[in-house]
Length: 183
Image 1 (cartoon, rainbow, N blue to C red):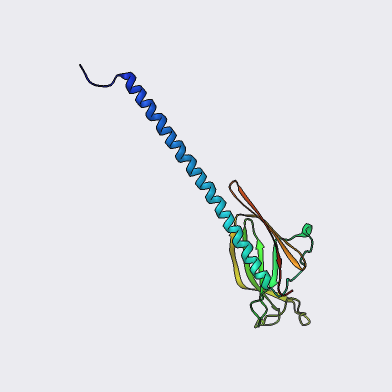
Image 2 (cartoon, helix red, strand yellow):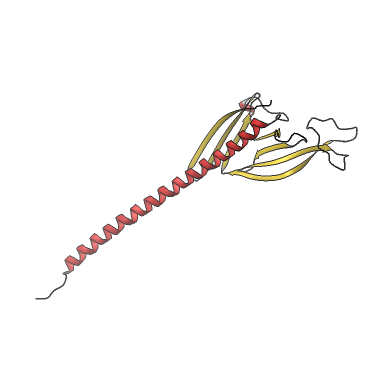
């Protein structure tokens, strides 16, 4: 009597092996897909939280919002500039703005165009005759968040922010209202 497997037994064993390996591969792929989706969701949530918290904290401390700032949602703008409330001896203005898919922050200052020392002035200062109120960048623009599709600001006593972020097939919509302590 010869010992071994028949071709039918071998075919059944290979079929069972292929089914088990296919199930393992499918389970692995599904878990990897779920992990990637969870990671994308966590990244846009973290980005949104960082953007909203940073802007909110600085607006709460702001001395005033400058320029023609819209009071109604239909006139909302994708940037905001306000006087830094942390610096009391000079005029530093924080400017948040949206680029293609990022939110950036820079610090600006204003001075009279004829002043070689560029002494900082209030944003609404009236320059001497023949000069203008010029702008200088005190801190270059840095990215504080990415994957931004929409950033809107509006309000008078209460500043409203609407932020939409998207990465691949995940979208996050955030809204907040900020009550300033100083204006």
